[in-house]
Length: 174
Image (cartoon, rainbow, N blue to C red; front, side, top):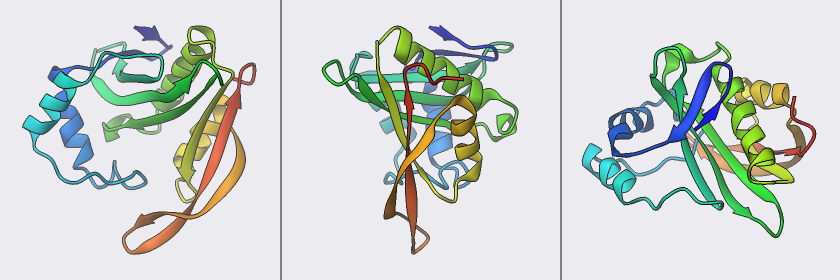
């Protein structure tokens, strides 16, 4: 378990399937994320049950509110390799009533602190659609900087969008 000021990050399991299924089928939540084909709740339960244990290269954590224990989102550090000390970060809050209240920022700080302190990462990278201004604000607030632009690399509603690549080096976390 990883503690922030507002959230705790903890391993996810089959009991979290209903929330994950609901978030993945909410167009507002999924607006700027890659689409997966529609799935059943049973498929999500099986995926979580069969998913291997968290490892250095594939860490999936639920974002839980400390005050009431409600699961509100997830965060992942993936594709980490000890040889490079670099990991890719994914995050989203599926509970919309927690948007804009500091929970995503707190979860970002907590997972990045874990990545740098416990995993001994040197860099954490992510991509974000250029129109996703709310996410960019969170990323910049914790210290991520734009490193490049991926032209027309994300498609939504028949339109192509650019994405920024962003990175945070060890020692830059705010």
